[in-house]
Length: 347
Image 1 (tube, rainbow, N blue to C red):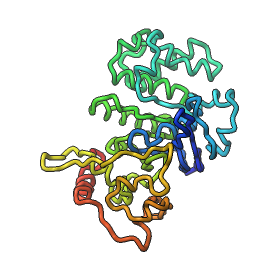
Image 2: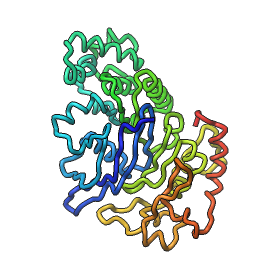
Image 3: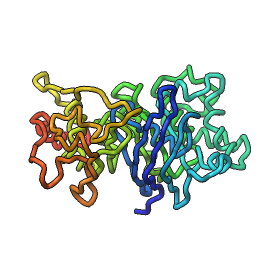
Image 4: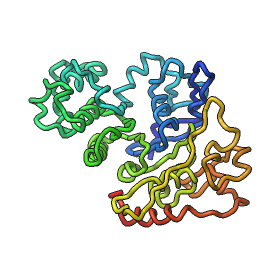
């Protein structure tokens, strides 16, 4: 598949009263046409900052001090504001976390969905509203023609999230960034939104970058998964490789804290001990070492490189070094692997 987006050695700093926060520390990834890439990690790991850098939607105190973001071979970081305005919401679009803050409470839904078309395309207001109605129908809003004149407060939480998705896809973007699009929704509505995104991907042919802290959510939507910790990717591979053959202790911890549909009272879900490091002063070695029960002396002294597990699977852990002691995932993880295989797409 053709690579349409390539992020190379991305570094993002934030200037604060206490000093410089090194929020993103050398992130690399690519996205192919029609692919879904999930970026997973705890809150504060840098997921949202990474994708906001693509669209240059960062706070004023942010500084992308190193790296390139290539979209069809052109560096987005070298684009002018006018050039980026033509790309945002048109070629690359984003679904934000909270539909209540993403929607204007004073504007009708029809106008909000039609607005990107009026900005990016030379269409009449009538044509834009007609397209808005079509897209609202596409995302599953009942009676879209009648509801075009309704306001956000007249819709349920799940419907508002569908409307946010409609705004993001009304221009049929080539890349759709979904930043925790199901966080505020109940489990049933989460599943509906995931199914909707998969269906839309097939219909409009978009590529998706899906951001979440919940590994369970990505099992049914992602082709590849990148696990992020303290501003760096620590493991990436196909969705099967990450779920069935994880190599990094942090990935083990995320999986061990995730329930499955048949989790019983006898099953114990573990949390990852400790807290992420302060990125005002990033650790010299592996940032996960203080929380890693398998950490060795070298973890405190040197950052691990990526070790190749397969041609599509890499993990940055010294446990994969040929001279490292052989360890196996905790028993709870191994038991959960078996459940994942049985549950398949239902996890």
